[in-house]
Length: 325
Image (tube, rainbow, N blue to C red):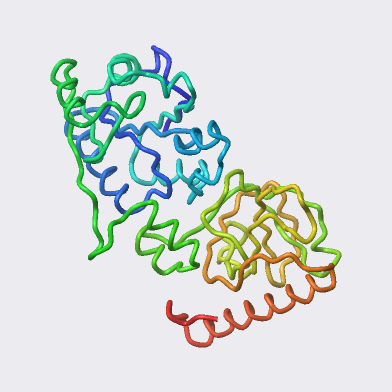
């Protein structure tokens, strides 16, 4: 899969079947849309393409307004989003930098500069509530008329439902914030995980008996707290672990979000390796403790709970989603 930061240069442009969106989480609704794009691309002899945005447009406008509380929490980092798009058969992804200039494009400028000249779109699918251009002035009806004028087909996909539940990124965020990983998996079509390269941390964990591998989380995640997890990418089988995802309020006040993972009975160096941390169960919310001994005692309890959870899974073969700590 080819990834472009911004519109491809003239030599790299190719006629495509395209869809446009943020695709946070690439949930089952997104996957249904991507399957339609892939099928159309195959039928018409085109490349299957996705245009997505960085930062998220709502995050851009929240920063502009000075109120980041209005920015959506992220389900997935860009690495995981791109991997999911590739897994769904996409040939090229355009990661468009959402800026003042891009936000100011009129619907006509967006159609001509981006869709027609920039991407050579021949077939386009969007959600039935899709809006585009400055102040969201463009809608699906306008897009259909533009397609007739410039020679590309426009199709819409209605909201995808799972039973009575609307599948959306908001629903996934809500499930993750509540620690309901079973429901999140139903919406995503796969277990929830965060991947990344292991970085060096402050190495405080090893001084209190809990060495951790650390992953940087560049955006505000849709979940936070202490979790039972398993780590993929370091052995043939996933490794049992306990993890903290948050800002480490007891030992740091910088506000940086970090995913710290203590793998049980594991002592190998893994700096620089790419790992995937799969979330299994939430233990508790993140807390600020009065001192390091109190924090260590809490980690002792968390580790004990996590070990017991894995022991139960080993003895029974599985843990029901309804089994809560």
